[in-house]
Length: 78
Image (cartoon, rainbow, N blue to C red):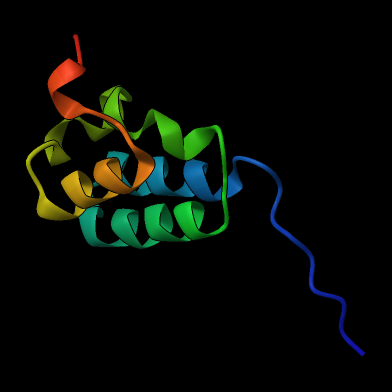
């Protein structure tokens, strides 16, 4: 019998940021979705303000995730 281990808190979020930083936008979104579905909080809540994710601000997947997180993009300040 295999015991399923939950990932360390923040691991999925860290992988998504690392993917974006290295130019892997598609892989980054995969990790973000896993972080969101796995409740990898507080990491995924930083999606709207993390500097490594600045380049995805207008991507529909980013906007959808912000909406699901309840983050108002119009309230952002940089």
